[in-house]
Image (cartoon, rainbow, N blue to C red):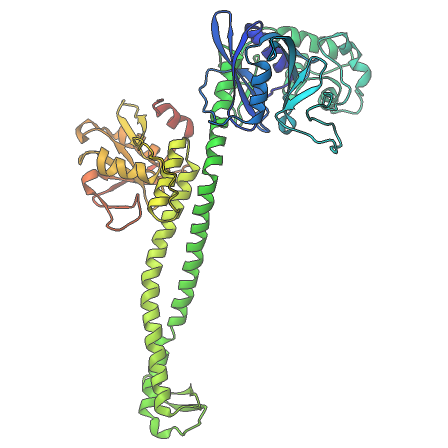
Length: 564
């Protein structure tokens, strides 16, 4: 990605559509992100502004967002000063990632007032600050106290721009002075340009260099001016590489055709929305993830303890033999002996048996019998507990896999409900009756157009396998690997070999082995799949299965997914 000063310049051009527009509503969805609802040129628009440390940006958006019932303080202040106001100017400062939005509105008694919303899109240092027309700070989404070594962002203080190195504005004649700032003999020219020119990113400098072939003192400025002129043709482009790259214009130094969007807002919606939404979902799910990880660790510790008990119980046969030998040779044992050496008639060898000198020989024999019985009972219990613990471990491993695959708030809620039902989380009664949501399965299409349904958590898996599917539908699951239940929702006579391989790829992709090759996937008819009585959610047994090997490829699975 490259949300640089050049990108901001292009965005400000796109936002001219809302200049002179009226701000009807201001909403804040979280600690860093705002939505301005604006009426301009006979249409409604949504302006998203975010100071998120990873997803800082501003653009027109068509997405729908959820907002807290109790609005945060910053949005209340903005509403007081800007709702009902008219946007008079949207101005980029220099060629930097700083934008001033000037709004004319009225105060409580109807007098005109001017407010400036300052956007600083600078990664983890991003901020949104509102000032009056004299740049006296009214509020900021992030505050910096006076003891800060950089600057102060607090109500009542005069606004100061973030401290930056003095750089040349490439959109003015300042850029002509660039050769004097470059040492052409020291190398690393791209880095030198980056330090000398305002609003450039490594991506843009690579593009200029591609057009210039190589930089010289004579061509460096003309090459920059020429590329800036060419970039006036806005073509919002997203390049799908190992790491996705977007820009406001085509990049000729990158091989391959990009995905082109009608507007920069549409590009940023596509690039950021899922990332932003998934981040919110991850935050919401984090507490439950900690609980699952804690329970998984607890079960692993329990398994190690049970293994130790089993190892100790291996001595039980030795204790039983000691009891028998003491009983057989009791006439040779004297009171207060600390040990006795007798012939072991099982091995025909002599064995030395430790004794407790404070008790009689017969009591020593009984002591060894008691130790034998105790270890025998412990062994029996340990085997039972170990089997259950291994099941619990598999269950929590499946939950951990499901947490990695979460993409919606509903899936987080389904995990929470399951944890409550299993007694892992305590039920918190808020007094409100929650409307039970319908379980939504994930839908795919095979290359032949058949419907494949996928459950991404235990509630969805149980619903898909036990209620949604018919007896003759084909059911898929990775062999001995945590993963989703997958069903081709068609009778067998409609299913071809290609459909089976497509469904197997989907099952492999939605498993813990999703990035592996040749993943074994079992499949059988639903009538051979049975819920285990008393087992954890999502656990089943099955028979009459066949096995295929599938290598899941992400972009192939994406093409099969049905968008809802």
